[in-house]
Length: 215
Image 1: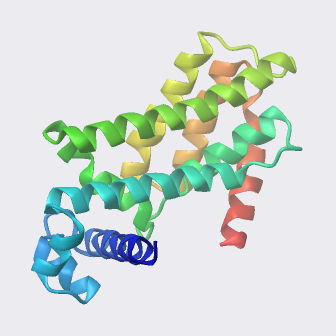
Image 2 (image 1 turned 60 degrees about the vertical axis):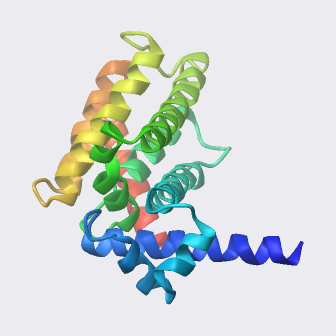
């Protein structure tokens, strides 16, 4: 059992090294040699723990996806109302900035999923998990008579995830401010869910500030 634990710890170390290199040097810079150097290992030693460079990349992307979803989960408290939960998730999902390593890694490897089946699987599951977070909040809001969706709630959830996917890229690239993106996504969410824009944007601002102060 000790050997299994040690091997898993080393695998996590290598995946973390891959994340660090990808965040710093981009996907193209995260070569096997660069990852091994970051982990303080020889390249052939790294391949003892992973069968290929592609497997290491997949592990790094999966770890980044898990970190992002964990951030969404931690942003929500059980005692929040549906609108507050919506604001919290929008704030947590769109607070990326040029120094946000988790989001940068996900975007670095997103185009690679066009040709890599494993990365495509991870991306699909990640998007589905994000969508379910919104679907659950919207369903709760409908039950509480806070939300009146203009279209099917699943479509609203998917639209919001798509908005985040596109607009956070602009933030990471330095082409849009975080405030602008939050305002835009919040406005779209309010319109699609039949609630007032102003109060939702105000709550998003408060939740975003709380997240920033917490970090």
